[in-house]
Length: 102
Image (cartoon, rainbow, N blue to C red; front, side, top):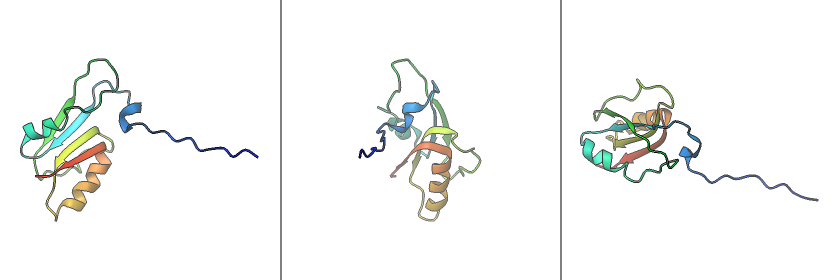
């Protein structure tokens, strides 16, 4: 008897994205620091691409964005009181997310 083995795929989340210019959300006070987090973010193809970056201020609500609006979101760590709401919206609006410590 042969047992079928499940197919496991180990690939980054961005591997199947077909959008040529990824949309990125950066949230926080010091935007140049947030831009440094994009250094080395994987490129999907050898083609040139430009990032479509949108900034939000520290403390702005992410509730106004639609589900899966961004390929990547980088935000500065929220206060303990706001952490639950910010993380919930972060996982809703972005396919990948990074919370940077202050």
